[in-house]
Length: 152
Image 1 (cartoon, rainbow, N blue to C red):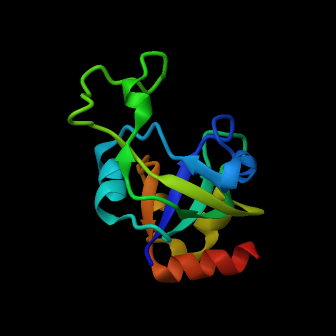
Image 2: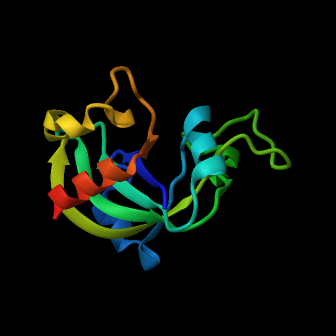
Image 3: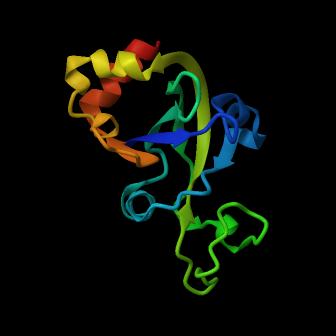
């Protein structure tokens, strides 16, 4: 199993929204970074663990646990002219952007960013690297275990 930290702005999709979705499944749309897209396309697998991270909010941090629930597929928002994620250069026969479905598993206590940064064993965590702005980053096995133990 791989593990991922996936960022969502809570005013777009919070862990509560994901838990309230039908079958607790949410399409992870709107990713517009090639590196994050490539993670979904090349490395994510159904059943991979997800740290559901609230970003661009008063208190950013990990707010819940989820799992990847589908293989990558064409993000429908790239074709929707009314969507803020519309991409006029993307073609249906050669979509530029992908998404995956994510199944919310549980809301946890919030593990805020400063608490994450204070953990010596998380110093090399991809999401905590200076200048990192990716919405999807890999999480190592030891990082996953440490975070899950601290969330419960």
